[in-house]
Amino acid sequence: MAEFDTIIIGAGPGGYVCAIRAAQLGLKVAVVEGRGTLGGTCLNVGCIPSKALLNATHQLHEVHENFEKMGLMGAHPTVDWAKMLAYKDDVIAGNTKGIEFLFKKNKVTWLKGWASIPAPGQVKVGDDIHSAKHIVIATGSEPSSLPGVTVDEKTIVTSTGALALGSIPKSLVVIGAGVIGLEMGSVYARLGAEVTVVEYLDAITPGMDAEVAKAFQKILSKQGIKFVLGAAVQGAEVTGTGAKVSYKLRKDDSAHEIAADVVLVATGRKPYTAGLGLEALGVEMLPRGQIKTDGHFATSVKGIYAIGDAIVGPMLAHKAEDEGMALAEIMAGKHGHVNYGVIPGVVYTTPEVASVGATEEQLKEQGRAYKVGKFSFMGNARAKAVFQAEGFVKILADKETDRILGAHIIGPAAGDLIHEVCVAMEFGASAQDLALTCHAHPTYSEAVREAALACGDGAIHA
Ligand SMILES: Cc1cc2nc3c(=O)[nH]c(=O)nc-3n(C[C@H](O)[C@H](O)[C@H](O)COP(=O)(O)OP(=O)(O)OC[C@H]3O[C@@H](n4cnc5c(N)ncnc54)[C@H](O)[C@@H]3O)c2cc1C
Image 1 (cartoon, rainbow, N blue to C red):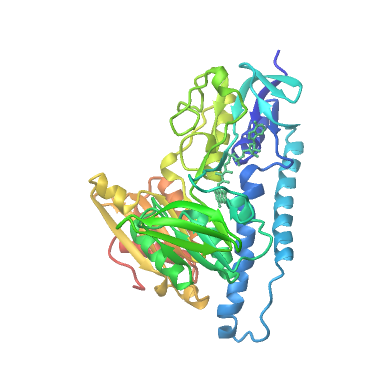
Image 2: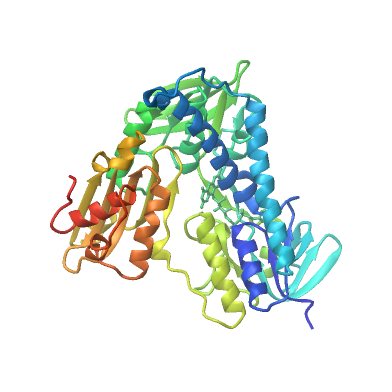
């Protein structure tokens, strides 16, 4: 008989959530984690530390930009970088210890070390071989590399290095205008660094609704972040004073160089499956390095499953968590399900940007008849009171049925507001359903209702 019902490899949001749910459903569960703490990329070097630094620097920005407007006078705080990093580390520790507590509470065994799979049904950790009915690969992802750029995590860094720089750089070049690059760029811009974002495409945040992306770039530019778009980076090297990045503009092939104290390479992430022994097992892989799975997270080898960043789909913690929960249900003989049509995406800058469902570009491409309801935060009293009236809510609904197809928000608390639309979409709601729902005043949420009203007879405060 197998020692465990399920062994999960990797304790990130996919793995640890899968473990807790599987244990709650009565399975005997172990999780193997090679890192010294639980929580994976997200809690240790991803979502959580970046949000801690975004919070600290947002507060600083508020002091500088808005305090005097509210009659809050006095000396502005100075930055103690070591202390700010210590605050970030405390936040990480609190969260990773929280997962340890949840493991104990749910009787999930933590097997410490790096795992491989010598044969189906077996997981090797150090010299020990454990057996399990189900094996779940939740090994996540690592930063992608860029030809001609060697990362040393000091001067030329990935997001991991950017979360723990020795000092605040005076200048920072970010390669890649995706979510991670813009969030970290915002952190250092608010700390006084001159930030330049170099992006291959002609727009920032690829995949985002184009109207929102354009407004977002304008707002970030106003905050002092510079953008070089349509630029193919040729290489980056450490110099005596920092680093320099060379790039060619795609429009005319002209060559340029830009120097900075620090260069952040934020060109995306790739699945991490090294050392598991998947090739020997014959686990089928996809061309971009993800593990191939069916609709129930099963790989091509019986009894081995995969979830999270290691498989296809958006590399997001909540997507990994949902897959973890669904797979736990499946392993317990129930019906797990993930609705990939309703997975929100959030950028935690100020203002925040959030989206769910189809973009306007996607609807056009599908040839779908749709209508747009838009509402500016300029018409939202609460947003104006806190100097966050930049941005808007945009709801896309089917022209005939009024069913909500997507929503895109740039503005205060967008990352929280979006969930109202997510729930509506899960229930197959129409824009009118949202518009007829009473919303408390004064809240940012009223802007969502107004955008829904704008899909019908019109917004009130527009
Ligand atoms: C800077 C940054 C900011 C981010 N911000 C957000 C955000 O705000 N919101 C969001 O949704 N997502 C965010 N992400 C993405 C998010 O972190 C990932 O999508 C998420 O962590 C994926 O979860 P996972 O469980 O698939 O894998 P991971 O979190 O990567 O966890 C995998 C774990 O497996 C372990 N492991 C790997 N191989 C083995 C092995 N052989 N044996 C034992 N252990 C192993 C690793 O040590 C790791 O701890 C961010 C990422 C970064 C880098």
